[in-house]
Image 1 (cartoon, rainbow over the protein chains, first blue to last red):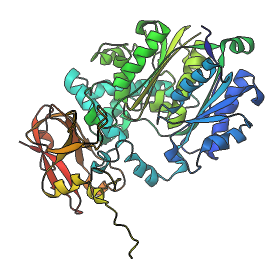
Image 2 (image 1 turned 180 degrees about the horizontal axis):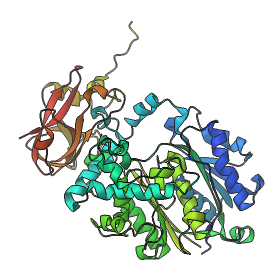
Image 3 (image 1 turned 90 degrees about the horizontal axis):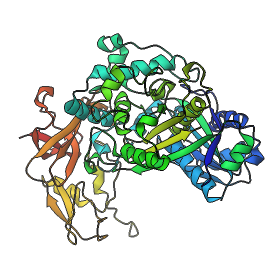
Image 4 (image 1 turned 30 degrees about the vertical axis):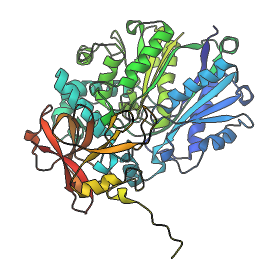
Length: 388
Length: 144
């Protein structure tokens, strides 16, 4: 069985308001990945474009980008699974290359969240789930994750302070990441000061500090077959395992509220495909759109038993020096979360770690890394396992 | 005017802001007007649905009958919103929640009549039709 490798990675800076168009934003990630892989556009024989289209004024951006990237007349695909779009794009690229239909595929994720006004964004926020049966009650993303938080606290005794520790870790590393949108330090004391912005209410029990930062950004992952990867890349990183799952959009269709079944199902598939166990992961990027999401990821991925995620963060095992470093690039919480670009950015971080090129946030010589990327409130889940 | 078709858009009356107006489950609104919260059950295979739906994914039939939500459900989890999307700002603060009736679960709001201290995970609650200040209809979870 021939392997499928990642031969180039790139991302733009994640910023509050990108001073350019979506094709220019997307080009930043693409350009860096092409330079990283030492490729020219004739080496790419298909592209996969990933985003959540409700933020775009441009209809069907894939065709527009293909032209702007110099990728005509090669075919392009458009993939959407909300916040996990670009992990799903990498899954598609794997299948395209594995099938022999294409040899080298560029997966470009992007989101310019500032493309629409904040009131338009607020309006879309209410349509993030089941618009027929949930949205008429006035729902939004933080409130759904807050419902999971409340259930987790009730069952396992998780506290707001346990969650705040995750935010403090994210900020520790966000300061070191020059591509991050939020680069300020955050302390536990800020969460216990009612006057501090971090402690401000959003949807109980989640507070401002528990929520990730919106951002504009792009990412690019270039995928190729084994022979090509070995011939042109000094340090190819191999895709060892892939998992993907869905769950009911309406919470009424779910049974578990202390974890995400999409993450559990996707993780099992990815671990089985890679033939490894959770304790063999040396570095991970997980989808911390909210602090509770990282806590549940520890447990859904098998880094901790259900309910014991809080011990992992209390003992700092998920810091760089710990047994399983998680989100040492600042995560979505501090790096920012430009929806369609997020999965590719997480994969980029893990690829740089496995190549020992992660600079100030380098983990000690990792061999296997994992990416956990969730779309919606556990509507879509992708887990990708990478090795060098 | 003879060519104008009447559009059945009853569902636009559901919730503070409805994002759907046309659905095969529009009768849900008439039942709300009668004070009843209804789900659907497949006549062919017996599968029970809430929210109601017009197609059964188990046996692929579209032969549904309505049933009334009755009795009490257990509060699974909830959240109190301090911010809201466009169109819902006047309602803030409010609690969204999930009730478990055993055969099905219901997503909705907790009645404004309950204070924070009254709300406990695991408590039994009932689902009741509620008229909103803007004349729209929804349902809320009340203390038993």
